[in-house]
Length: 295
Image 1 (cartoon, rainbow, N blue to C red):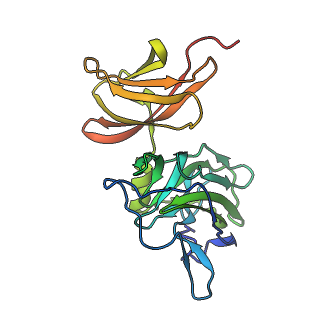
Image 2: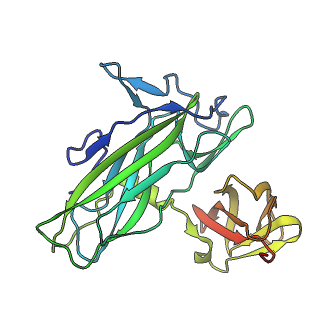
Image 3: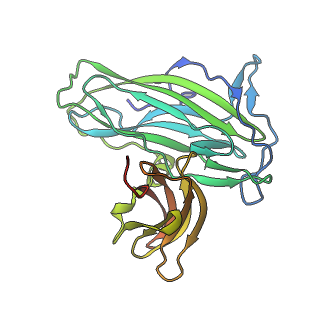
């Protein structure tokens, strides 16, 4: 049976209540082209005086039952009120990266976490943050084993910690689980519209674009090329070195030029580019090893 947000679905079981604690401060409201700071505090108190995080998270599934040998999605869904944002894997200068762990029964194979492409938030004090200011989700693909019992329920678990920012930043955590049963009947994808929208912004690999390639030029400049693509921006997924120093677009070749500091053989440049691909904005994942041999 499909789960929904922890706060409204009887089939999802809450293992541990959310808690909050301050982390790196946002220091200043975003500029006018970014979400403005809301007037309420980072947490809301209920009638008993207990606090709940302003940004809430829940465990969801793309299916209501399991088909043997088939693939489906689990997701951590974030309900983000206006004026807040949740940190990406590289939080930038504010917040901290989310830590999300899914658990599945023996025999189920879990893929890599899939984060939607982020937005960049520029604060009035010049600090930069990366994250999400609208409802979103972090996904993982699950491959069910060929042998499933119709007389057994299969338990899936979530342990998530995330960081939301407004006038300051706070940490929240949730643990939850639900159980699904196996069926021999066809199972339809039951993702709702907002979840589908989030899934569509998961970055696609650069190699999926026509004539895609990367090339290191002199002085730590990585040139990224793909046919018919107009590059808009780049968000490094690693806050540590090599660090992004400058971004530009070559006027002749239309290559994306990324200039880095602090690279060395063995290092890897990773991030997500925002681009216009065939008239639509899309996120493209880029990964390139630093040039040179490893000792």
